[in-house]
Image (cartoon, rainbow, N blue to C red; front, side, top):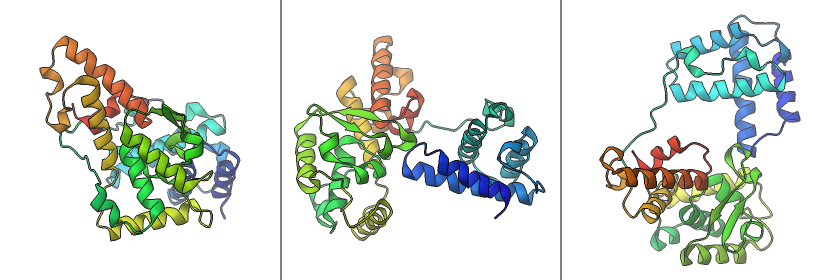
Amino acid sequence: MRELNYQLKQLCRRNRDGSYRTQADRERQLTLIANQLHALGYRRMNARSLKPKHVEALVQQWQQRGLSAGAIKNRLTVIRWWAQKVDRRNVVARSNDHYGIPDRQFVSNDSKARTVNAVDLEQVRDQHVRMSLELQQVFGLRREEAIKFQPSFADQGDYVRLKASWTKGGKARVIPLRNDAQRRALDRARLLAGNGSLIPSARNYRQQLRIYERHTANAGLSKMHGLRHAYAQQRYQELTGCPAPAAGGPVTKALTPEQRRMDHQARLIISRELGHEREQVSAIYLGR
């Protein structure tokens, strides 16, 4: 194994930031980046020899290959993580504008909301997968969060608490318990999982993920991330009294000043409940 590849793997092993999936994706991306640097002619690098010229060469290659702005930004995030861990933060420009990367287009008023009903769930043969789907729907969870969900820990009475190790980016959060459907789903999850998670004791996360993918596909269910979109749109209606733009409601430009204030406040709440830090990201789910 080349020195840079080895040192980056060791860096990942010593720094377990984020969820299991985040860690695995980061290590995979860094391996790819190390291989690309070698192919670009940088043959004697180690983890601390990262320089601006290396970042510039990588970005130029990615742009020439037609990678999307989002993909390039994700890779730069990984490089910034690398630079931070070896105390070379200034090697990577703080702004992506420096590299000529256009902003992502977050806004879409085409709804991607999905729901699952009792008939849909009956087609899913694995009871743990069924339960994960229910939790995705009623709490707006990501797939990984719903698979790793541990009801005995999460159930705090009037809210659920998510561990950092379940979430994208390793950010713990809470989600309010607002209705009977959430309470019933949570009670069923506790009955099924006991003191454990929605990963049966004989399986690990990777195995349960494969089972989730197989059983949802066999049931004809796809794009289950749309359950988060539906949750966000339902919350928006509850908080503002009108449908989100993606669900047929008025666009932001048509709102009165008071409605804009309510719109902004609702988006902040929903962003936090979904595990995002920026209000801007709410436009993915709600439109604008």
